[in-house]
Length: 396
Image (cartoon, rainbow, N blue to C red; front, top):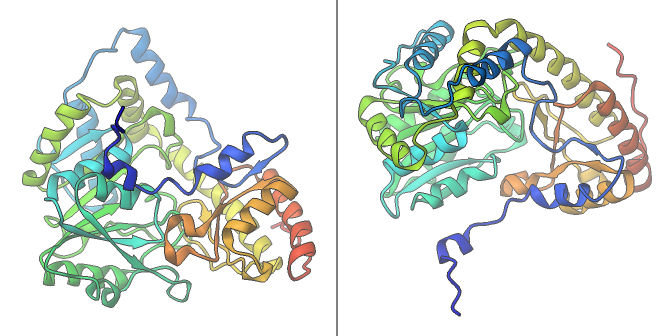
């Protein structure tokens, strides 16, 4: 019998994250700094609204676009934070997380062979989303010397006659980088000069430290040119509820809604009720979680630097991206040996793109105590394999 798997799927690169998690799953006593998921449960009053919707029998499909109440809440939320108004009936779509929103955005704007500038390092699915929509990802490297912020010059150097869009993800997974206003303005200038769409994944928008998040669509002349994606997963500790949202111009939104109707029908109903409660009454919980992540951020960054694993200061999301050159290993070798020898799971930076080579991603969305234990074990690992260091006290 012939092989029925399509060539396009065969050509997709497997996720560089899964291998280490699969190994870790066979081991006991592993401290994981791997999965990018909050260790907090969904706040109780938010979860209660989802449970209440089930108990009331509110389990049918909603409008394809999401309940009008949730879309109004998203509109008010964005306007309150950034002063931008998106019409609930024609510019907001509730999606199954940002993952669906990403694919909808790509499929809505790309014809076969159109190119998207994908800023790396980035989440492993970003380039794949372009390919699955029939486009061609053109990767644009960023570097630690620029704190992993993309520059206008590096974008412009990759533009061709087929370039259609720029995909940015800040605050960034895996680096924890944020964009300064100056760098955002450079991106905006390139988008305007070459008539491009900017797809901005801002799922970590509320998890920013020692800085203020700037919504890309709020820049002059970028409102109509930006497809903005965010959701409930990270800031509100609601990953499993699978509720995201996307906003865009009416023309682009009409195309995305058409695809969403055929692909999904509607996002999970009970998740929408919980998301409505989160947007209306979740600010205290968001701030409490952000402050705790900030405490952990200081611990892990100081710890890595003390071990000779130099780490620039991540100012967003809940990841840090230390350089592991002091170990004398490749990032893949480092991650595998660390897992097998000391039972600490991290992810090689090269899984997130070529410019991540020589780094590792460590997620601090785990307990303070787990981070302390991971650093203790990594100290033993580096004493054997790299520059001998002593972890400084993390008490603050």
